[in-house]
Image (tube, rainbow, N blue to C red):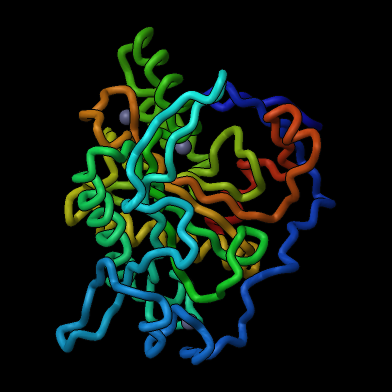
Length: 327
Ligand SMILES: [Zn+2]
Ligand SMILES: [Zn+2]
Ligand SMILES: [Zn+2]
C-alpha cells in the first residue's frame, strides 16, 4: 500500500510504500580490506606536501595532526577571487568567490566514525565549528555548507574519511526554502516547526532511532530515501557553530551512533550528510532550527524525481527506524 506524505517543514511530497522486495543498492560499498595507511593516498599522513598548505588542524601534544583542513585541489570557489555581481541581459552572474575545503577527519585510511573513538569525532565537530567561525569574518560570504560524500554513489572517489566545506556568496536554495517555510509556520503558530516536530516524534517514538541528552536522531516522516536520518538538537538553536562544548561532545556521540547503525543496517553503504544552519549574517532565529541530514545513497534518482521534485521511498520510515534501533 502506498501513500503520499508531505514533509512538515517544506512542501515536498514523497510517495512512501512498503516494498519488501526493494534491495538497497550497496554495490559500491566502502571496501573492507583497506590498510591503515596507504602511500598512494593524498589524504594519508606522509603525503601532506601533495595537498598544499594546511588551513587548520587539530594536533596531538607531539604536533601530529588528528584532523587536517586543506584546500580542494581543484577549487570551485576561491577567496582570492574578487566578488563581482553583474547582469548579462536577463541573466545574473556572480564571480566565483568563496572557499572549497577538504576536512580530513582522521589520519587513519581505513575507518569511518563507527571505528573511531568518540573523542576523535569530537575533534571533527569542533573543526566544523571553527571553520565556520573563521570564514564568518569574510563579509563577502553568506553561507558555509558542511557536508560529507562517502563512497562512489555519494560522489567520492577516496575511501579515506573526509568532509567538505563550501563557503558561498549566496544562501543555498534548500536552506532558503526551509527558512521561509519555517518562518511561515512560526508566523501562524508562534512556535518553531522543528521543535514541534521533535516533541511529536518523542511522544510517538515510532520514528526515533536514538535519543541522547541534547540530540535526537529520527527517521523523518517524509523520508526521501530509505534509511534517511535527521539529527536534531532538542533545545531550540538556530546556529550550528554556537553549540557549547558539552553539546559538541554529545553531537559527536550521536553522529557516531547514527553512522554505526547505518553501516550495520546496510553494510557500509555510500552516504551523504549535510548540516543545515542559519546563514552567517543572520542573528538567532526563533523559527529556524539547525540539523544534520544523513542520506544513504541506496536508490537511484530517476526521471520522475528530477521532473517532479517528488521522491519515491520503498521503505517505510517507521520500519527503517525500528530496524536501526535494533541493529
Ligand atoms: Zn588515506
Ligand atoms: Zn526549534
Ligand atoms: Zn534541512
